[in-house]
Length: 101
Image 1 (tube, rainbow, N blue to C red):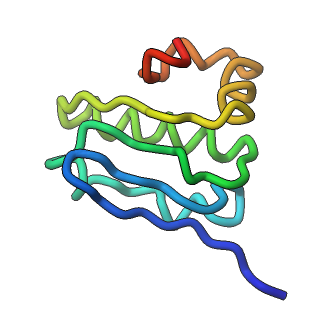
Image 2: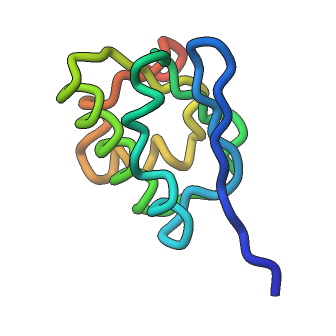
Image 3: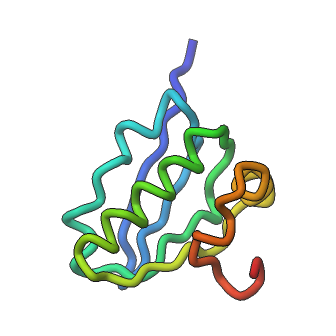
């Protein structure tokens, strides 16, 4: 059985996330401390699947940024991830791109 993994790549000031953000993959993506020095955007356009762990991951990244006084925004958030964030009542805490505000 093929194991699904997610990955990160940095392009300029954007951190691009691809693959699934699920309970099985988010722990590998949890710490973005090193990237926070040079990013301001987390682009989720290539995220393929999400579950409630993805919402927790976005909040963890936001906490890491706030602790370092860095402003980040989430761009191209998948609709199903935004729906989960709304369901859990945390969507208003996520700095989203204008298209999802």
